[in-house]
Length: 286
Image (cartoon, rainbow, N blue to C red; front, side, top):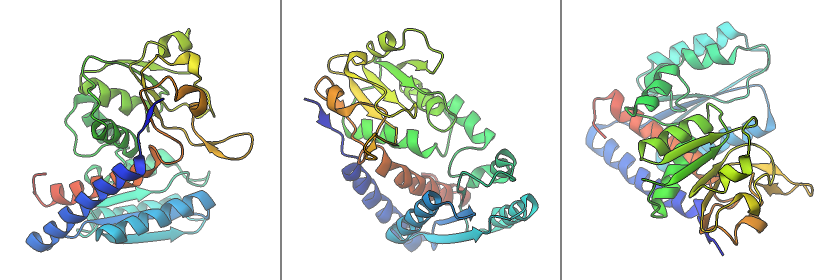
């Protein structure tokens, strides 16, 4: 039976370190990391995420700047706010909560954020830096996965790593991070032929495809490490991942549950990015 990778425990340890680093930074330099979160409209899930980010800021001693804008906010108004925040020295990280209302151009909004304050790492400049391995910040979910693997003592070098999913937010950066750690990486997606056979060769399998219980036991190698990035609802409306946990866990050596696996790491890594951004913007080497 697989050993469970407990995201809550790993997240709590990372936050303890961040809290201490933040206190030390404030004491030695007077700098307090500041995160600005912009929410346009009243999407219920987005409101929960924004609240959780605010609570994380409070827990770690960050400045939290919240901007809740109406559903009818224009592109110009939103870009003007981002421009103001780009110039504010107390704001080290800017995050626009997605999805945006349909009338707003998501790409233009994300690209308007100054790269050094882009703590989601969505700006093309930051994406390029990840590609060449010279980055300050990483997309939060892939960064969280790497943190979980490291905390579990997983050696990535030389391993067959399969990533299911090719999104800009998870799949692509995830594959780059594994490659930079000398994993042999295969990216799979909806058009991949013989998907089950490819997955069954993976020493490390990262699943981010957005389909409930998609990966079953026949797709998993005996003793594989299985990281489930998915968050879905099953037929009984219960939270589940992209991996069929019940059938896969007896075959895996390590596995992340849903909930309680990758999920708790995402906001924690956002906080880590914000602290790194605060240091970098003030010429402090991490």
